[in-house]
Image (cartoon, rainbow, N blue to C red; front, side, top):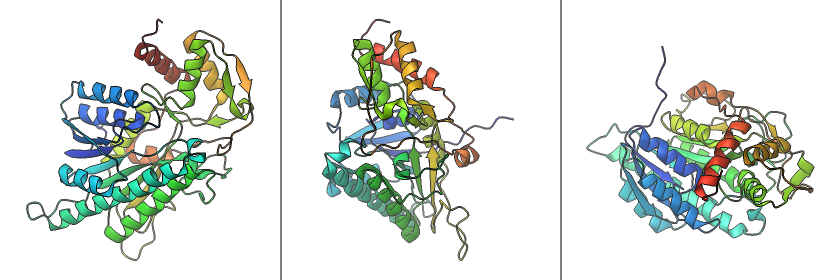
Length: 362
């Protein structure tokens, strides 16, 4: 007998809602009937017009779940407090807002400290205040604290050279400031889980791609240049590989996980997993089912575009790692999902969306 996948019930706060992953998560939540409180600062790291287009798409969506949007910079402590106060009791907080980009962190480090450290602390404090309210709520004294699901990154594995990356692997040697801030998020979340009993789940996303994607990522860059007949830069001499993960798989995993907050180990007991913690805390990989070489990604783009790319082979850039392969067995065990979309299918869907979005003929 089939079992319906878990879904968060009630009201959900989603930060980074105009972002690539955030918008798809909001769509899925609304389609499943959740009331979504959405927040984003629409910052200009990449085109705010693209982010507004995502919001327009979400607002026009025919879905049973309501949507309320707040334009908020989470690094602004007072503004974040007002956001959480206006959101009221929520079942979970899905925190996907961040300053993204490994290479951008080499030249704009302060943006990462503001968004990824100050912003994350403000979100943790907002969740703590909601948790305190849950404990002291006379109308519903048994209401549990919100489950905080937040975006980490495969970048935290840094110099780890394991064939398959597991959440329990050492992550002490980040190779970029972006990765360092994401690892800091995990440590900060653990402290709040331990101190305040706040359920926290960190998701280490692996190279997400697909429709509504980011212009700074490989799928978009390669597609844009191939369609324009421009050469593409192939870093790492084309020998890099990644656990490319299709956006629909990522959103589905995120929404399922949001409905399943972790629990703390019994008093005096050790955590049951190396990636768990002293409180209600867990970390999970969300990655594609295989590691795909960069040249296979390029071949998929060429096939979907119907053109062959002129390639300029270049050395690896600072902050990049040669390969990532995600262990997703814990994810599959928890929510019954293993990301499965092949790079060929996913890229074909992305290129079709890209052409439609930009008004290009097939």
